[in-house]
Length: 265
Image 1 (cartoon, helix red, strand yellow):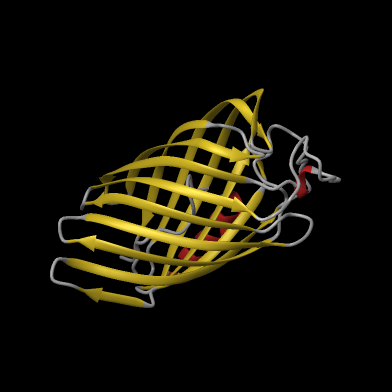
Image 2 (image 1 turned 180 degrees about the vertical axis):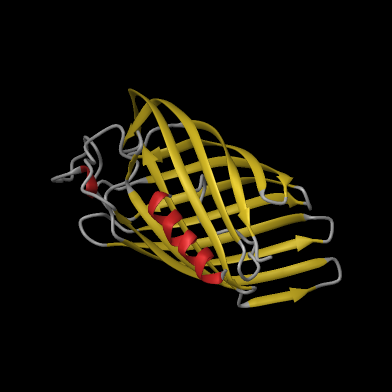
């Protein structure tokens, strides 16, 4: 059974994004596998050329898949992949390990590191309004801290560094998430701040050879609502909005999906 589920996880990796990021504060039990299949529609009336907004409308449909597999109660394996117009772009794979889990009088606190990266599955064009990646090869160390009260309310903070191989600039990313997790449903709201560490801007003064060299930064708000329909199926809706940014579209997205759940019998 373990071999079959691990094979299913790797197969999902080849098909398979998460709206905000692949790492959350919850762990699957050994042998448990969740596969989320989702779609979203995004509309952007403005593109930030550098930090200056210019009129550039973009409509985009993103389908995605996300897989989370429990190797042990403290160690999980995660993969994700967006498909733009049904074509894959940058795949990612991560692993996280619960380093600290402590029970307090009114809840639990956990701290865990994660590491992973992303890579392009083919040489897609980055000079297109349909690209959401930069064809980047990245390595991403991540640190997450979460407090969950007995009531189900939780607060999570995470930070990671995106080391990108040239010519794509490196970046830092931090996020704050407030949510509620119960037996049959889950909801959260989050704020994400992504800061690029390069110099090149679209229509800027620093010369560049391709859009892969542009520095991307943004501040983004989002939400997720999830409901467990049965022991093997869940449904979700999510959304996000780019508040401000640099070399990125000011996108409002709304989406939904299903979660397929597999457990050891």
